[in-house]
Length: 309
Image 1: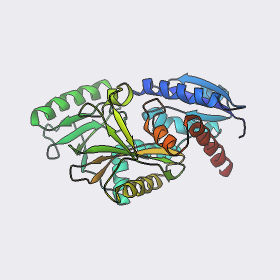
Image 2 (image 1 turned 180 degrees about the vertical axis):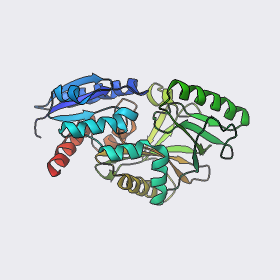
Image 3 (image 1 turned 90 degrees about the horizontal axis):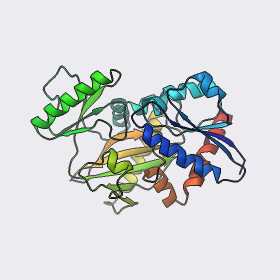
Image 4 (image 1 turned 45 degrees about the vertical axis):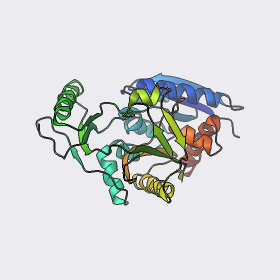
């Protein structure tokens, strides 16, 4: 094991800042347990290049979630900084953060996904048949998600989304066909290799922000019993989408399973959480890679790929 001086970044200016603070803390503490490693954890906002260059470390682990930290802007800065860093290059980060773009990429490699439209607040009528989901195009962790099964729910969601857009002019929304009554499954990808699927069983009907990061009532089944061939199908689809987008090092691909047992692509996360409730570390541990070893693996991936250019 080569000793490393790792700069772990956390925080950021996005709605998922709280999750990022916890992810970065967990990553920094895990790396600090490894022999010879030095770790500097820095809590940032919308950092600039000069500030980034002044921070110590030979390798950067950006444990940030959301449009700035995960969706391209921070990756642009890290490219200019020149040090090895964990995660996607900027072009892939942007492609994955764009939920409509990633759905189109999925369709291009044969991954089924429900119809979607860009939401325009001036259009009061729903552009797709109910039930639908109205949600931000460039956010994660179920931020701003509205499930609409009735016209009244659609009208309420339009009002909420319109108010959110006024408060955050950079935010855009989409409408997509809802998959209800089945299950949510996720497949992690680690350095190109799909991990075992995880089935998510929240106590509430919807796997929202609280269920993801705060509730101890949410149950997770690693490598659950699935219909014959479904596990391999999910892993193949997750890997194909990751390759199509240009993901490197890690990602998590989320699927919704219909009542009929058919998987539908939900989204791609290029810097999934590293908290006590997070799914990619859970799947890695199932594969024999505990948290500290996972963090070390990702740091070594960054160093390796920087050497390759």
